[in-house]
Length: 392
Image (cartoon, rainbow, N blue to C red; front, side):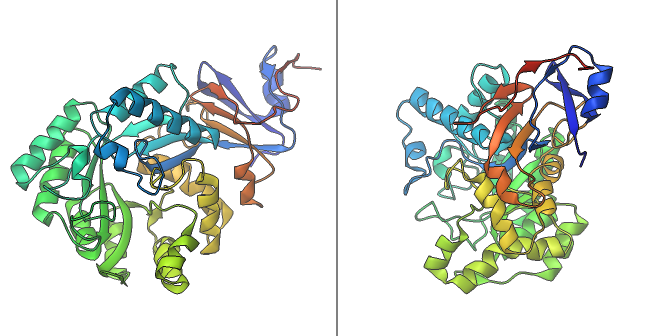
């Protein structure tokens, strides 16, 4: 932390970080935005979202029958803006169809619409009838898996998403604890993806699917729920140690409302299941923040981060999981996640100090996404926008 600190932004990049007085002395004529009671920190990273899901009680319905693609793309653009409203300047979209997320990504990058930097996976790879088959990424057997990876790469994705286990939003598909691909098939997928320079995110709830994902060398494991069967949650020290040894990051992909899960399966079981994030962190696993937005709300990221405090995380750990650690794990640690010279100007200004009160993250005053200014709804830039000489 730098008390009385400041960041100089030029052309979308951070060009200096230090004390306000020193920076202004070295850069006379700079336009100053002043937030004397606020904290500047790196823009937040939500490492697991689905812009095409609508966070309703049937969140995937519109993607199963998309109707008008233009209307769906507009909805996705609105969801991207909601992420930006709460200080998210980078997000991974881990499953869409027809290349829509890539179009939204490119429109944001061109400055046509507001939103965070998007890393998109396109259609997740899954077997016939498997989890999210309706997104169009069906592949059976090693040859089809490799071909599907190549097709996704040709479509311009930033990473490959594979459904290593079943999930809860695909009726008739594999259960959450069941594997959808063998270890050998996942090895083939990772080899093909890494050969094309693409990281791999593996959706894995079941113990067997987590085991296979580790063996295959994926880059991130999504959920990592340690289900040994329906309703059987059995965290494994051996698997956690292997995750650490392979330097794989885990994104729990769950929202802040874990108590709603408690109403379904009981508070004790819900606490243990969602609290696995701290259990993993205590064993040295890199835990990064992500909410599965689309199944949950797009504007609940600050609440989801506060949830980590319920399980014993310190505020500094939570902030790191949503900034520098998430940036490194998602492959953008060289351009974002830190306030440092040469990095993109992804900056969040919040009222108060989130190190002592994480609820400050729910009070964004200003967001910069690659240097583009965004005012969250109802925010007021108190005392901002003054142009002043350096020595006044």
